[in-house]
Image 1: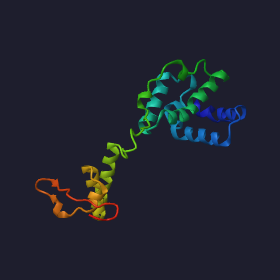
Image 2: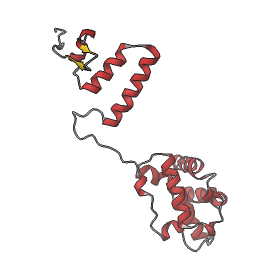
Image 3: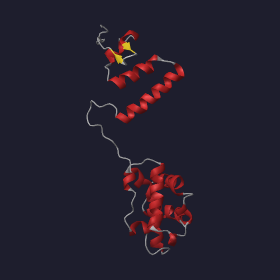
Image 4: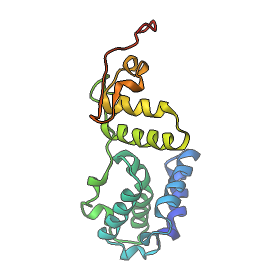
Length: 187
């Protein structure tokens, strides 16, 4: 079982690949957080099929949003241990290497903002506005409302700074933006 040979593999890897103590700690953490207690951890090695590994990968990726690089850093404890088991003669083939596993569609991608002008993505603005609304309900701060207006209406800071209640028409759901404050504080 993986749980029986993981630490043996870890010691072997540290000795023969000259891994630093940090790498050993990182591999141990990955094993404890993502493998220990899962079905593949306690299955006999010769009973682990590619589908079992695929189910493990899908489960990990659904529970923890990860990029491909992050996931690859964690899956090494499974693939490396299975490679070691094959080299020791415990299994004939490493099931991870025998088939193309289907889990890559679950990777979260690192988003690159398209320009320097785009400060937030739309979903980030939505999350931020949700937090601002919650903050307003908790403490009644008008700053929260002002920032929500800024995101919802695309107002400039100078336009927001000089807003008055009279600028808002609640019946027509409109805001009149007829003035703004400049850098020197003039309206």
